Image 1 (cartoon, rainbow over the protein chains, first blue to last red):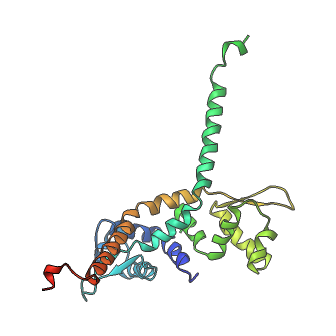
Image 2 (tube, rainbow over the protein chains, first blue to last red; image 1 turned 30 degrees about the horizontal axis):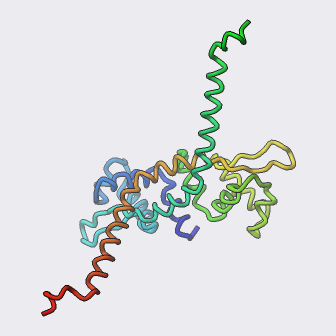
Length: 117
Length: 117
């Protein structure tokens, strides 16, 4: 689990951590600000921040009291590149679904006259 | 951890499981075939396959002995969609790096004549 990509995916495997990243996408925030929407204790939020920081997904300012968190998206690019290799597979299954739905729809419509006599 | 996206990311957070998916991208395979490159016991591989199956990333055939595994890419699409929202962030940082490197390179070149007198 110590490789970079595993660390990234592992950090993303939690709804609170993904929500924190979504919040930071709109700008820097302090731990207190990040904790607000979650009804979570500061230590609980800090724990999530540490996971994100170890994964290189956030960085923290140096000012002792303030220390705002900001998003660092570089590891997400590697994750996106990895997933991208599989695009043709999900696009193929969507194509198959699309073809199937068209088939079902065609079967429901009244057929051409010559087939109805 | 029980939401779909967390389950997907969690399943991807392991190099063996990602290697299994990469193998299945080139076609169906049995557990024995999947175990071969890993120097891993069949039960260990089976455990990884169960994680992938629960995450909906693989499906297994119904034939009792054979039961080949195949890739199911639909959950990867949701993961890709989630990550895609952050694309502008990593592209921005690449742009900044690019600008910085150009600056460094420009500073290394001998300046125009008028600045050298």
